[in-house]
Structures are given as structure tokens and as C-alpha cells.
Amino acid sequence: MTDRPAGPLRLSDNRRHLMDADGQPFFFFADTAWSIVWKGTPEEWRIYLAHRRVQGFSVLQVNLLPWRWHLTDVAGNRPFHDGDPGRPNEAYFARYDTFLSLAAEYGLVTCLMLVWGCSRPELPGSYFTTEQAVRFAGWAVARYTRYPVIWSVSGDGPPDVDPEKWDAIGAAVQAADANGHPTTNHLQTSRAWRRLHHDAPWHDFHMVQTGHYVWARPNIADLALAYYHGVPVKAYVNGEPWYEAHPDMSNRPAFGPPFTATDVRYAFWVSVLSGATMGHTYGGQGIWNWKRDGDQEEFMAGPQIGPTWEQALALPGAAQNALAATFLRGRAWPRLRPSPERARSVSRETPRERQPACAIVPDDCWLVYLPEDSAEVELLGVENGHWQARWLDPRSGTERDIGAVTVPEDSIWQTPRPSPEDWVLILDTC
Image (cartoon, rainbow, N blue to C red):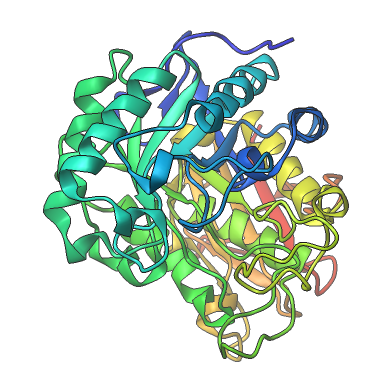
């Protein structure tokens, strides 16, 4: 069924993105399906995998252990006999063999989160000593390395509380993986600015989350740009921005309005054009927690909020992110250079987080994302030459021709936007 080449992914020579086994650039376009294996069934997996394959997703972010330590899988199995991390339960872990094999059939890579939670209470990571975590990670890597995978040693916790533990786990992953699959650690929002593991030899790329807060909007651009300019170079992906249909958590325990397709379009385009040249992760409420009618788990935001997993498959933001990924795959996306200084709103009233995001392939193209606003945009430093301009509608994937660009003497080019909605402006050489 798969039409993707077999073999482990590798970092590109410039360490900005991933390459497949045939040496072709691999656009990391992921979905957060954290709970799908231990909560779902093989029949449900097939429905989901077929849907995401058609849309063009390439990676699934999946937890190897339940989100909470005390939870069981759908068949009532716990990961470890008597809660002992040294005694894996075959009935539980065999489900992952089935799922990883099935995902591979559909041409999808699984980013497997090994020991979720770090030292955060009630999450699995806090129940492992360093020695237990090292042994378990080595055991899991040796077992699952034959599948198309990416590793994350953990996630959703503060790894800087006991950094030696997570470095030891990362080293164990590297030592146990004969195939050398890429490895990361999924960092929660509060740790995203600390560039943890940047110099660790086991750590191949940065995966951070900007989180489920409306106030995180500036971080989406600023984190991508800061990591892009890090030395030495290391690839970066926003592994958990706003989830579509998930409520704003800025004022917990109260919840704000749910994030919309407009928000997830913003997260995609601003991340990638601001320096996340490896790719982007989408998330949807109902998918991440594999929600069913009647769920009683005390998940973040509660089971009563948001769609079921079947309903969440139809959320429009996922399809619109997929259109964006398809568009970029057809272009020289690995060569994009974030250039925020080259595009700006003409209105002084436009706040910083509503300014356009701009990336350039020198002497080839400009891509500029305009968030919702009524102001026009101007591009600075447009080189003299032959340029053709058009608009990409990020909701439908359709394009509107603008025509040839006449560059003024001051090299500042301006064009009216089609509407106050968000748009992508494209300049190509001709």
C-alpha cells in the first residue's frame, strides 16, 4: 500500500530538515494522535490512517505509554505487570507492533514518545528511576526500530529538573538503535526558550510546543526564528501548537473559546515561514485524546469538550494544513530562509503578532503569509528582475493571479490584499 521509500529517515547535510532513504527531502507534516494505540482499535486505526494518508500527513506523534500512569489500554492491559517498569506486559506492547506495522503500510512514520511526562506528577515518567528508564527505553527501541519511526525520549514535562536522567535515556536510545532513527525530546511551553539538549550528541532536532494559550501567538514566530539562528544549526519543528476545537487554557481552571481553523492555519504558515524548515505538527481536540462518546477520563479540557475522534477527522483546519503541506512539497521549501524584516503591514496599528511572516528563496521566490487584517502589505528590498505575483487562498488552495511585478526605485513593492481574511502572497521569478 505504501508508496514511500523504506529505510530510516536522516538529517540533511545542512541539518535543517529530514531526508528519506532515497535522499529526497522529507517534509515533516505530523498529527498529534497521542492516545490512538492504547485507546483505539485496529478497525479505528485503519479509518484514521487511510484518512490522514489521503490528506498527505507524513508523521504521527504517538505515546508509547498511557497519558496517565494508572490508565489501561482498551482491553484492560497495563503496560507493566504490578506497576513494575522492569516487567513489560506483552499484551500491552504487542498492540504497538500491530499499529506501527499498519502505519507503515499506509506510508506513515510514527514519532514514538518513549517515557512520557518527565517528572510531572501522575504522568509515567515520574514513576521511573533513571536506571529503569534507561533499561526500558533501550528495550523499546530495540523492539520497534524495525518500523519507520522517530524517537522522542519524553514530553510534556520539565526535563531540566533532572537533566542527567534524560540525557542518559537519550544516550541509551542512541546506543540501542542499530538503524539510527532521528531522536528528539518534546519540550513543554515553559522550557521551549531554554534550548535544552542543543549540544547533546543523541539529540537530532528540536521539537517544542507553543501550547494551548491565546497568549502564545508571539512565540509561534519568535521561537522558530530563534531556533533557526541557533549555533550549531539544528532542525526545529513546532510539535504542539494550538489544537483545533480545543479551548484556550489561558485562565485555567476556566476555559476560553476553542481555537479555530484560522488559528491552526496561522500556526502552520507562521511557523514554517519563520524558520521551522523541517515541517509542522497539526493537532485536533478529539484526535489527540481519541475521544469517544461517554469517555470519563480526566483528560486536559475534559471529555465533555470538543468532538469525538470520528467527528474530529472532518475538522477543516486539518485539511487546510494539508493543502499548505502539499503546496510546499511542490516548491523548494528546504531552501526557504526566514526574512521577517522584508515584509510589513502598512498600518501602524497592526500589532507585532499580526505582522506578515516572510521567507525567501534567493533569486527564486518569496512566500509571505498575511494574518487576518484589513491592512495592505509591502515587501522591502525586492530585487530588480522579472517577478510574477499571485495570491494563494489557504482555505481552499486556489490561486489568484496578480501579474507581473514592477519594482519601484526604492525596491518597496505594495499590493492590495483580496480581503481581510488571511492570505499567502507568492512571488516567483519568470
